[in-house]
Image 1 (cartoon, one colour):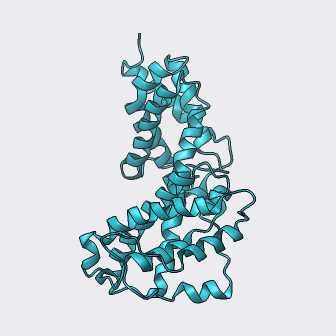
Image 2 (tube, one colour):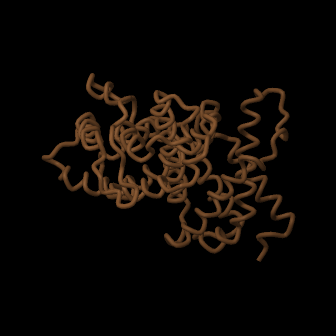
Length: 307
């Protein structure tokens, strides 16, 4: 769980100047065609964030970093500035969703630009993003029902959502590293099936199928979700596992399925929806082994996996 907090930038540390700047709308229109105008407060906010994260000139060329980030900001700002939705009146919920898209695009751009920097996950990006929001959206209709003070909340929630998706993506890949697949190419194929199954399981897992009276409703729902994820994955990814594993037999696939999902259910870095993470039992979770064995046995009875 600590990794998620680090990705989100932790609790922002603000001085009096940054608190004052936080809700001060920069004056002067932007150049909507060239996007060459200075972003008021942006460079100062970045400097403040880097200082709080312990990033300094001795270790990093901050001028070069700022230039790269500035270029990424302008590219995505122009896209969102020209989005016709900015000229429509939105409810607060709609505006929050739009801001989530904006933050996701910006954080993705920052990550792609600075992925090799060890300090990236330590930086609180919210203050700099707030300056970008003020600069990008000049008197937009979409904020009609939004208090200016809510924008930082939208940004914080957007960063948390982005960081959680990044954490899940890395956790899935890490789990596959333990599954003795033949090559990175095979890992990519299996990874695609595993991520697609994760998406599908959110709505299509067999909710209500776990009926043991000894389990809490919350744990029963968790088991239903995990079983659904495993079932969908093995249904979609059997061929990729059979071809990609060192041992592609049903026994080898059962072992790989167990190893992968025990790693995914690591309480220290659980690959689960946020609401289900506190419910996860300690590792190793016997439910994973039992479910993997059951699924492979069912597929064997159905004729799959026979040579």
